[in-house]
Image (cartoon, rainbow, N blue to C red):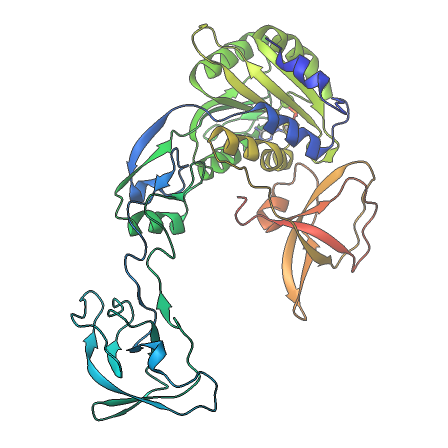
Length: 431
Ligand code: AMP
Ligand code: MG
């Protein structure tokens, strides 16, 4: 079997010392696949879950030809020519068709039936004239010229057809799909099991909530942002706390994590000064590549697989993220999020859309790396504009909290002038 590291080193343009963001994401997506296992859930519990099997429609939707408007059901052939200058047509009102109650009789020549939205089209009617344009004179209905065949009607099966897939496997179910499932009369669907993600923070300087900060310590925030991002993605999160920068403690944590999860996310410990001892540990525990990604923030990152103790267990993917709080979030969104969607069985994994906006402030930028500045969108003279949140240091988590978008400064770009167009990724939907 080809090893993960061999596969990586055979990939085109693979340079672990300087990997473009898009290439790193592609490599991760090429190597990962959906985890196995699914469950049956009630339709409401299926919201935000990933469909494991196609939903096949048992019925036509709509089930019958019906009216899209309140008006008059007519036979198009009875009407005067459809051009605007033709004469009016006088039809005899023979009754009313209500939604949910079929009109018993057919519409004969020269006749019309008052029809409500959603009511089944009476037999032989093929056109609905909206009530606002018709004139009622006793039991005669006067239809103006200019009507079109089949106007204001909905055909049986025009939305969904019996026997055909209504929703494809791999879809993450949103309110619209939940509604479609209900519209088919289906009460339960098969969804993929949630992805299990174990996470821990590394660093001797980290202090947990509830303990006063000693000199040189910082509170561990990464476990909380990671927990939030993973929970939003629908993962089952196994929080393993803080692990000291100590080979014995780290080895035990990695082994335990690999036994219980599909993916392990760590923060800290992959920067140049720390990577050497982690590298030695990883060489024993699995196959892990140490990348320098051409990006800011978030340059160092580890990606690979950790083998479990027992041979019968599949092991877990590892995403070793940098320690700086903003770098954690940026690398999570750019690399871990798409990978988690892939593990969850989302197919296809949608690319995250970018939109142009006018940047109202100048920004420094070095060529040869992709930068993810944190920005605030606003409208000016009907145009979308963006400005960076204040200090952009990779430790300044406030820059994320104030932002509603990433300003993505692409690999080849140099400095941005005030008024230049930049691409933004909305955090809404991403986060
Ligand atoms: P490292 O990548 O381990 O060298 O850490 C880089 C920076 O991020 C250091 O200033 C760390 O103190 C900080 N850091 C690392 N882990 C965390 C964490 N879990 N929460 C908050 N800050 C962290
Ligand atoms: Mg550290």
